[in-house]
Length: 420
Image (spheres, rainbow, N blue to C red):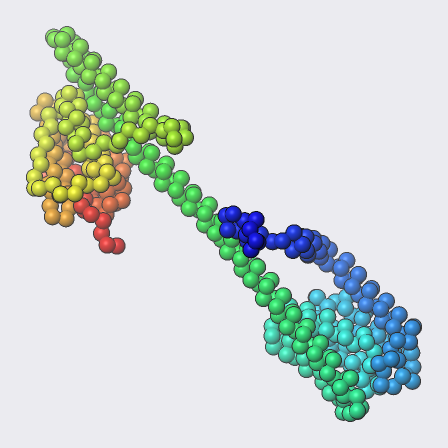
């Protein structure tokens, strides 16, 4: 704690005395909110006893304009100003109207009982809870009898009118201050609740986005590698009878592909399971890994040709963009392996074209249409995943059969983020 009341982090800390007072006030407010009728009853009882004691002791005569007034009338006036306080919170305007005739009798008769100041408690509740125009009306109800009494006793107008005027102004301002602080506190609490709700919603959206990303990565990894393994297994089974050496090569390639798939899955799941400091930080695939990807596809029995056109930008694409291109090419070739028809002349081509503002990747094959296995309008899970990846960087993906045979996937990806 520093000399200016802040801790080392710069946070303002209340003094011990202020802290005790705040805790005491919080307990009082909490008790009042739990049992408001009890507090109203205690306050009303205290005021009634004060009024009765004032009458029985004769203290009212020290400030009365006419000390010869009947004590019974003084007791009635005192009770009329104190007993209705039981309803000061639920019906403050009605209570003040009820007191108005007695206030007029009080000053007209010259009794001037001190219990008349209890009207200010009602005024405080009006200032705290009701609109300001109601407070202005309450001022007229309280001050009008005093003006009439001052006209009846002009020599005592300073005693009759001025103290009540000061009391009304002070209590009104006090009520407005408390009301402003209460509304400000409620606004802060509401804002904190909305921020907490927004934080929870953002966390849920982030979790959904992360689950979608993980599902997309697992679909690409598992789908591609299983397709390669399936192609190798089919080729190995065909070659086993005629060429055992090629069957052994196919088995070796299956083992290599399986280990690669397991390594990628372990890395992906390790990010979820391990703390950030211990998670595997192996880099994600980039455009430099396309040759390795195509080599695996060729091993599975699909001839693939890669062509690069145009001039790559001086500044390399971001890691996210390179991963997007890699995954789209991977998914396109996986679809060819799964749905290309499996005929002996099946082949694919990947063309990367660098433009001035965008990179275009086109994956085509000459497979035969298979409507039972592939969504005819390109709305399968893999196509959806490719479009979601491309949309992250304002890119687009088109998929379909432009000539009725074969399959084409076209990715257009801006080289830089758009100003929007």
